[in-house]
Image (cartoon, rainbow, N blue to C red):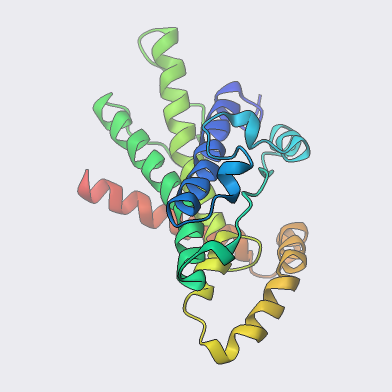
Length: 220
């Protein structure tokens, strides 16, 4: 059984996505936009955030998506800044979850494993401990990967909204045109990743994950 359909993977991805989307909703609500709250997205109930097709893709191929949290920048006092803060809340929540998993693994005496060992690894003293270690390991890497992927600066990913905060007003119209074609660019990068001379997405994700793991090891 591959790690992408392992039960611990499913548990970890559900937690990661639910917290990610709820963090977007929470940030938007605190900044004055009630849209997500009124839509029932300010919750840690995964059912509110699951996209059926996205969930199926996670189970089948290890890649999928959740329902995007609705945000209306017209409610924000500073639309450009507050949109970026709302976008950043999702990846930041995954970073916090990853740090919690890393600390827990350190306390349990289980050195966090490499990319190639999301689930398989040294077992615990009993089945319960083994499952706990598997969930923590998969949570560590899934949250870091989800954070890194969403920071990629292509729409509709969070990174594109974070970058928008730094775009000068005179270039904002051109940037918004770029955002509109972003989903097509992202889809092309995903579909043709293995055919590109330089695997842009996987390199981006691996570089960020490795850097964050290095920082975790330095400070924990």
